[in-house]
Length: 216
Image 1 (cartoon, one colour):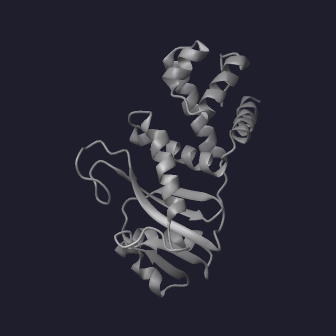
Image 2 (cartoon, helix red, strand yellow):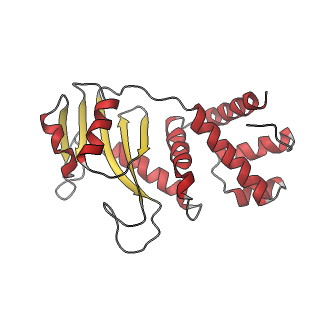
Image 3 (cartoon, rainbow, N blue to C red):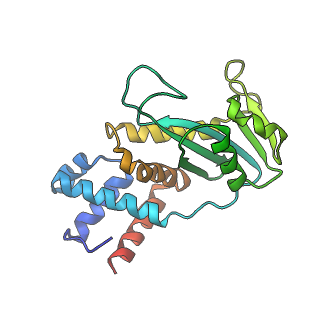
């Protein structure tokens, strides 16, 4: 982050409000800067998160995987194949971290290679009944699938963790009344970062360190 003309006090306040989930408009009003300045500063914070967030590495153990759809603008059709939506794929290690990425589509040829790249062989992979996951039945993974039409939770056979992440991410993004598609990857990484570092104090400390390093 290049040197800002804002005082460090105002930068601190903006970082605090960003961590709190405020919109740029609200932050601008509270800090006493114009909305364009707050929006740009928040954009730079998202860039720092994107550039500094470490890859979670190879997942192993019990892993939940799922796809979801974000940023829809056309009313009506929902879920898989919905128009004007960004398809996203996610993996979550139970009681651990989440990894999310934008995908071109939810076909098996797209999803299975990501799972093989991110998940250690012999791990247990939980999915829903989407047909793209059929290939996992004859793979290096132990595959369990949940059928939402029959049961939502069956002991360990569920994907509640990754669905909780989707819900948190969508709830956070909803307040912005639409996210530009060219910047969606930054917002997605922000949501991943917030989930993986859930303590606000830790988020605040990390962001301030990144900002100071960027100003040196």
